[in-house]
Length: 92
Image (cartoon, helix red, strand yellow):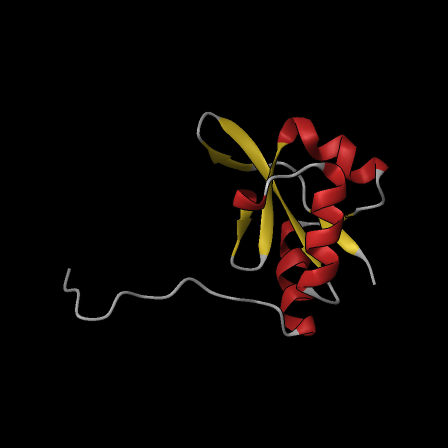
C-alpha cells in the first residue's frame, strides 16, 4: 500500500495543485491526509487536492512522486477512479 502524488501543475484559485492518491483504498488515503493535517474538504471524488507549498510535506511523509498520467493509471488499476458525473437533461 502506497500513497502517490503528482507534481503541482494544476492551476486553481491563484496557485498550483497536486493530486494525492492511494493505490489500495480510500481509508489509506484518508489516514495519510489526516496525518498531514489536510482538511477533509480537500478530498474530491478519488483524490486530495494539495497546494504546491504542501508537496514537500507529503513527499517527506512517504508519498511517492509520480507523473499526473501515472496517478490516473494507478487509480484505474486499483478500481478507485471516480469520474465527475455528467448532468442529465442539460443541453448546450
